[in-house]
Image (cartoon, rainbow over all chains, first blue to last red; front, side):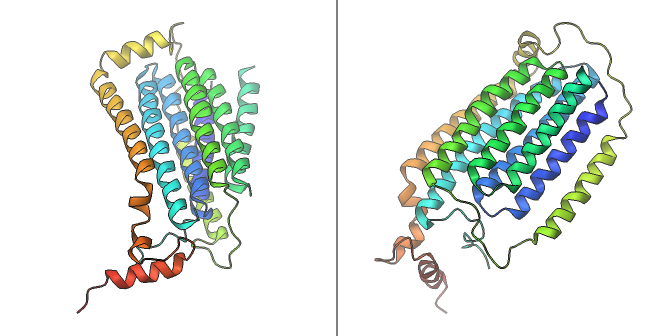
Length: 99
Length: 195
């Protein structure tokens, strides 16, 4: 089990998520890209947990899962509210705070 | 065997990731996310993390992706509208992503530690559960509070959707949600100080 392979997969997925956040304008897809980045980090946690032979990394993955679940629930509720108010989920159209 | 499985999951995972960011229809993005999440679950199994693999399938693939699909259905969301200018040019974003991937890969390839053997009970529900309820008992309780607050927040946001989100548009009576630019102007004008 070569650890660098798993870490490389994690790196590629994280970079893909970053590109998704930057190029997509639909708030839903930006959100999915963030989930992809969270999962890439989870893979890193599990890989290092296996390297060290302890389960602390897996416990951290559990907490990341909990926070991701709460984040998705709140985030999607906010997206639905934005859609109700503006009929769009395009992040470039929601710029009330722009100076 | 393990190398073959890893190669398959790596290809599927990267394909799913590309699908998330490249698909035109949000539903296809959600399916790409599902593909990436499931192949990551197989990777967790390869890393002897059974409990995390099961959590991944139940919570991520089961709950979170279904939630995304529900919202896509609810909003009847379509892809990005075509637009002349985007905030970040796709080429620049792709270059940035390539640089980030190269940096992370370079860091990943410096890891020289070889994994040692682990006992048969490594990564089982029992072992992770003992860690969760032993040294991590306090963070575990905090996690339950996070979940409860998330639930209450979602209910509150869902109930008071009109009151919260439409506040600027409602400031000017008669302004419909469809006239977003007009309502934005009205809200901006009302918000500015007089002097």
